[in-house]
Image 1 (cartoon, helix red, strand yellow):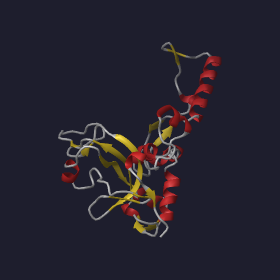
Image 2: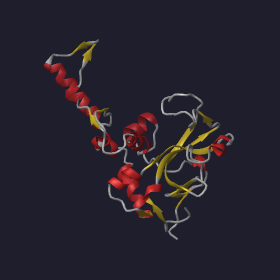
Image 3: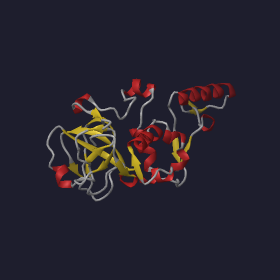
Image 4: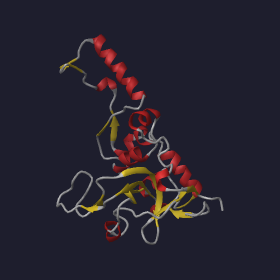
Length: 232
């Protein structure tokens, strides 16, 4: 996009991860391998740059909805031959996920503006939304009281020691170390849980420990000069 004066179809909105890679591959296996299915295009070695909200353009290249970015190829959306023909230091979008079901559930209109996109970015990509609404995606958050605590492989039963370990775990969860388990079929596709968590903002703790970005969508300097959309 060149400016903020656009209207886009809700059902065409995607989120994905902008990465730089030296090689794009096609999985030739006959069974699923981790997150890759037979025939899919993937990158195994890459440098992550940022998250992006976009719509595919006429050539199925990414049209950034928040910044003036180049139209990057989208793995498994852009023509496979185009992706496989890319050279070294190519920038592509991996793990593209359509957000139509999520946006429809939260009653976004079929036609969206720049302000709607800002709302989507701020509402769903806080890094906490999926966790705080895990039931929507078929997950349940594990409570410290439900854990089994061990000491040298032996289950802790001493009430005083157990109380201390539960308190320590509660503190750890408040700092962002939360755990979840799949318990049922959610109202929304389960893949959203991982996508919103992975591509959302990082808390201060994760930023310090894992060098992750507090603002997940902020362009990387390595992309070049990427500007915000102009008003006109």
